[in-house]
Structure formats: C-alpha cells, structure tokens
Length: 406
Image (cartoon, rainbow, N blue to C red):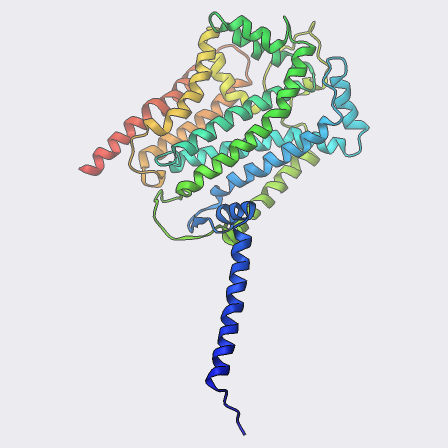
C-alpha cells in the first residue's frame, strides 16, 4: 500500500527546507560581510577579470610576490646586520659564513632586488604597449610610477649597506648630485650625510630608511590595486567592455603558473649564479682613500645613469633625471589617442619597440667609460627617450584620431 503524504506534511517539509537554506545563506553572507573576508572576496575571489588576459598580465602579482620576499628576507637579515662603518662589512660576512642559512637569505635578498626590477620593468613595458595608462586609469599609472621611484630609492640605499667599495663610492657620487640644486643643495647633502662626508651617520640613516620604505611601498601597492579594481583591468584589446570571469580560480591558476616559472628562474640565480648581477668590487671593504677605476651602479639604474652622464653639467644631469619621472607621470595626461592597444596602432608598435631597444642601449652605455663614442651614443639615446614620451605619444595620437575620422 502506497502512503500519500497530505498537504500539511508537504507544506511543513517544504517550510523546513526553505528555512534550512536561508540559514545556510545567512551564514555565508555573515562570513563574507566580515571586514577582511569581504575585501578578500571583492578584490581576489569575485573580482571580474577579462577572459582574454594573457601571461603578460601576471607580472603584477609576481611583483607582489617579490615584495613579500624582499620584506621577509630583509627582516631576518636586519637581525644580524650592524649599521656601523667599522662592523657593517664584517657583519655581512658573518651572515654569509656563520649564521645558519644566512648565505641563502643574503643571496635571496640581493638577487631578489634584481628580480623585482625585472618583473616591474616588464609590467610597465606591458602597460606602455597596451595603453594601460590611458583614461580612466590615470591614478593607477601614477601610483605605479611613484612605487617605481620608491623602489629605486630603496634599492640604492640598500646597496650602500654592505659597505663595500662600490657601496661607499656609489653613495658618495649619487648623494653629492644634490649639491647642484641652487641655494639648498649643500644643506640637502649635509642632511643626507649627517655630517660633512659619507660616514657612520650616513650608514645609520640609510639603514633606517631601507627598513621603512618597503612597508610604504607595500601600502602604496594596496592602494594601486584598489585603484585598478575601481575601473577594472585593461586587456589586450584595450576595450572596457567584454566577457568577464571571477578572478578565482581562473586567473589565480594563471598567476600561480607565473609564480612557478619565476621561482625556477630566481632559484637558478640564487643557487648557481648568485653574484652574476652584482659587482665584484663590493666584496672589498670600503676605503675612502682608494677610488675604484670605474664607478657604476647596479644594472637596474644603468639607463637613468647613462642619461645623467650624457649631460655635461651637474645641475642639467639632475634635471634630466627628474624629467625621466616627470615624463612617466604626465604620460596619461598628454596621451591623445582614442585607441589603447598597440595591436591596433601599427605606427606606435614600431616606435614602441625602438623605445625598448633604446632603453637597452642606455643600459649598455651606462656601464661603459665616460668617453667617446659612448658619450655621443648616450646623448642620442637620451634624446629619443624623451621624444618618445613628450613628442611621439601626443602627436601620434592626434594623427591616429585624424586618420580614423577620415
């Protein structure tokens, strides 16, 4: 005999099922509404990402990974480092020889700086190629330029801390550039040095700033991501519209794949070529009485250093460096093209790749002696660097817009 439930029993069962589902939904919502989890949910899990993002869009998250590596290794290195001119070099050698795992921390931190700059430079070149600086993402680009400037400052003062020959003389040459500033230049140099020469006070100031600045960079990176998510990520087509998918798990898997590839390359440098990107003179203790034959900064400063050396006047060189970052900052506001992606801008594509080659040329010139023909080549390369930002970008955009109207 088949028992048929009456309407009251069906209604009760349905009511209980509805209440159970509602409780589960309320539980999920209460979790998502928690301050930290809601941010995580909005900006990482449910953030709508364009479906056509390629591998080149993964360098932003890889840069974040590099920043985490630098902060963690820097904290542990600071536990054993002594910011004193008589003990700094010895303390670094102590870390390398006596501290368990100290050699790994030192090589990860030193090579991590180079990897960080490689990742950020690729990230910025991708932004230039696909027009990620164009409206409405002006704030995103400007924050990125400020982060780059702070990275350069942090890396420079960090390069001074081992107190080797290149550390000492690099600090002496670069900080003395501020003396070219009219009226207040000498006062700025005295404040940077903490006296009348690069000495113990300088090292202590640089150590304090080197410890502080990465946390400022981390805070600005969070603001950078928040500004990006306000209007959404750019894409290879340069279109604001298009199909979107949740960031997790689709883009998370892509980013993790990029992290794995980055970790392999990073490990090769750390374990097999740890000193390839450094200068051998920095394994010699700093000696104010002995000037190195050829003072060069780390490789990631070489393009800007080449521009500095191309100007025979010290004040002109300082202004040229300032113009580099000013050109980057004003780029979103002088851009006139309605088209973002260089995939649809054949003339800009050619000019862009010449610009990339020009940056490599400046990097090569920066490590050469200050003599002809390197001076002349550096001057030509510097002129093209500024022409790309201040002339080619605005004029080419107007020409493209005029061509579209025709």
